[in-house]
Image 1 (cartoon, rainbow, N blue to C red):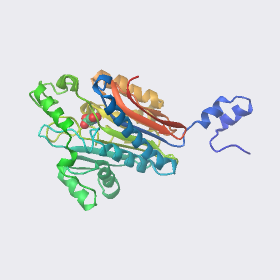
Image 2: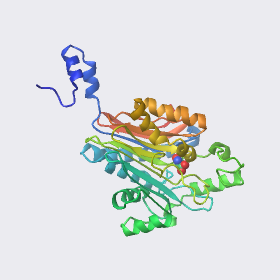
Image 3: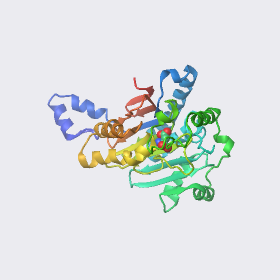
Image 4: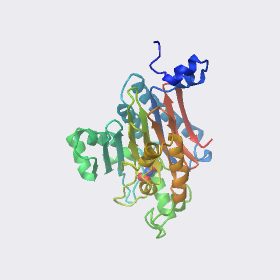
Length: 349
Ligand code: ASP
């Protein structure tokens, strides 16, 4: 029987009966897929110069091609997302690694997490200050410690024990982020999430709509059918000392399970934690039988909108389907699969 490996019995019967649609659809099922984001927020055309936009698009393309090279040669989803996120962390354009936002005290405190969908192993770090690539440290926590999350000085000590590259304060500094902190401070009198005494006031209220998120993340399905997800961020401009967002929290900012999907989120972390966004999307697929698209839209465009939580997510499911929904004016994003050329986008249209 010449039945091809990628052709289901139903597709075979359909092809024999003269129907070609199913066979064509099966042919287009990707062997691998990679999706990335560089943050969601009030990103509109008037806010980016053509040069900056071109530079950001080039970095997103570089990140995609780095991950694609690994996936197309049979590498793992974990390796692909780690290398992809490192490219984004090393770029000053995104709020992760170099170019991270500043806390109210003028520091860079970085959060990151990673999850392996094949065995539900996970690693995370929060509040690290001098680690060049927090995603690398999160992965080391996953692979070399018995814990899931390490924070602050303990996480940095673990970095040294495991030979993870460090960087001094000056490495993370960008004038743009520093000015953003001064701007945020000038526009509000208290801590960013409590400026008017309301616990859940929105980022738009706080900064008059000028605030942009810039967290980075990647999700992938590899040729072996394994899924992985990772997220890295500096958090939110002017955040309080000790504040931890959704990015390092497994189930909120990051989740991966080979049985359903892999998700990385960006947005107003407090809401993403309360809505357990990443896990919820996978659970809707797993327990309620929703498609990836329906599950992601339910959480991002319905649940989060009702709560007032701005942001978006990227996700890939076990069949290599990809989605990138957001409820803000824009989200830096991109994807590539074995059957689709790389595409990057910023605005809603
Ligand atoms: N989710 C991040 C946080 O709340 C921010 C972002 O996505 O840019 O820390």
